[in-house]
Image 1 (cartoon, rainbow, N blue to C red):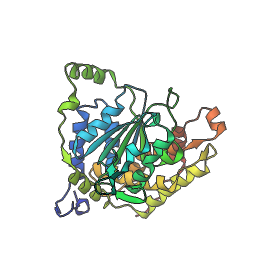
Image 2 (image 1 turned 180 degrees about the vertical axis):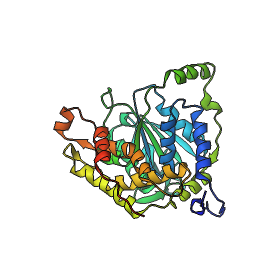
Image 3 (image 1 turned 45 degrees about the vertical axis):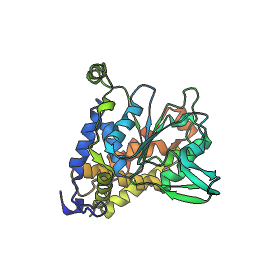
Image 4 (image 1 turned 90 degrees about the horizontal axis):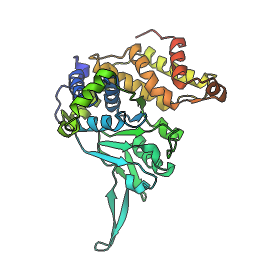
Length: 327
């Protein structure tokens, strides 16, 4: 690991091996989430990119288990919010309550005041409640009655959602989806992983015995180290070219935002750091393009009628946008 991979957490000033620390966290989560190494790695990439992760799939595939396993692997504050139709925005952000003894309003923090927030079944709450997460996900703060309260770092929202075709769900608006750094689908485990799951969970829940292998200070140091990775000017232009290509695609009525480009580069940095490199390659950008871009795109009516998917559009752009060379 080179000097550019060194980062300081507050006053500690100790070198941080991102690849080694990431491997420890990944292995710990994999004890519970079996047969899904790519999904587990993406969750860690999003954490180190200071982003937020949307986990989408049908019930019973391990969405909440992934979120809780990552949270349990970090010795940091964790809160879980079960999103339901009657959940109020103040339940998420907090509320000011009048104290008769002091004759002043006292702020009672909501569930969002934690390092890791597990938003379970986020699309079962009303759009009004969903929007309570907009400010905290983008600005890492909450404003109540005109007063802003800063959130702790690291801050990660891991939201699970059921497919919108299911009964009792509300589709996330474009502004909400755009604040999620990446989206991942769990999928069903392979046969061997499912057999192992039946054996491991026959007598208990492995989550109950999962011990943390990192703390909030370590994660902050890892995030700082990821930010030092070298990115060439040509690679930055390649990221912008990919984002611009989504806006010109005839299959899309809404392309990727500038925020998408920022998140694509940050996740590419995190991916490169976990691979043990101190610089970002085009392969890192291409690896992250699907989970970072696809959920932000809206198809045209003709593309939807032709049963095109945003993932197919992104793959096509990866094949058509040339990789710029340079240092």
